[in-house]
Length: 404
Image (cartoon, rainbow, N blue to C red; front, side, top):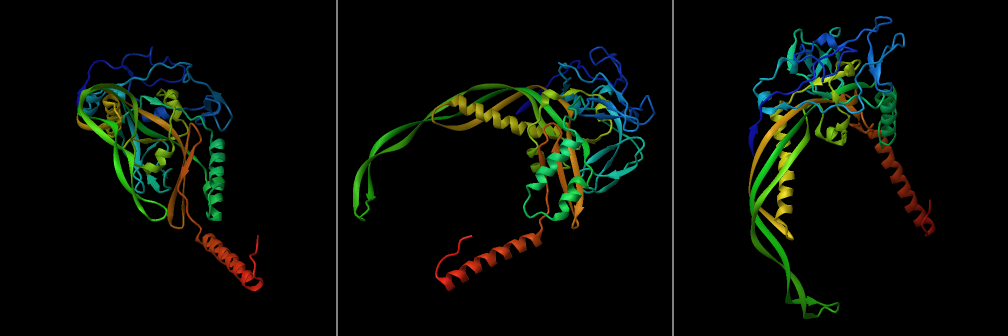
């Protein structure tokens, strides 16, 4: 595929405090977000507020105060898209970036954002200890965030149901991985890509036809005989043409902290729930900084686009079978945005290994790693061996099978 970036002015959502106007009426050049903007003191007692997925506003765990903010709108405006070429060239306005203090987990590679008062924590993905770097780094700020829709209590119930369905799990797993281990809400970084494509292709169209041919077969008595059968054949004819497709919000994970099997199991995500980025949504939660660049993310997006384009080409060729020869795709109007999606995570160490659970913060879908109890497996096989041995002994002794 060949790329053509687009340029021009792009709207952006600047940081706003509670009660200030939304991105459509905010000043044209807002100040870049600061690390301190991630914390919100309670107006009643001064404690730090957190976002409550159940209430949809900020709450104080110390005094119970609820502080609403204008984050939810019935029909939010479309999120701003950033021109891809400017993103690669680091030529975006300062309002599209922010300074964050983070640390890279040595266990899984995640880069976790720290608030101003924290200096050390445990990685929510693999339970490894991490310590914040002393300085701040500048990263592309998110354009959108999907707030948590599943509360911690709902996520814990979903995880307990998942644990109950595990066979041959250690008995300690239920306590340590479930009720005994506090869940942590984490916003995971994703890229979304938009693009327009136009593809020229050549190939061949295969049309099935049938011919009558003699076939030698063997009958049930073993005798050989000849009979006529309809045999399919394919007639190939050259084909060429053009197909076009517009891609919208091709979603690519911008982190390598979790195995691909985990993140794919959390699908699907409801991107219609995305809201313009507000740091209030992150209050009380952790967020991970992207470790995959937009260019790397676009490479994954292209693979998806390529598969969809090949499907379009085959459909356009038609016939009963298709052979795709050359494919030449022009890509234009490429834009992207950085969004955060909600995940509940629990990580713990068991038997010298780290195990992870992740829960989709929108749907409650659970995926995780689990240890095996070899004692339970051995006892089960022993019980089966005794059962089979007992059945054989009864048959030999009494001459008839035993039924259980």
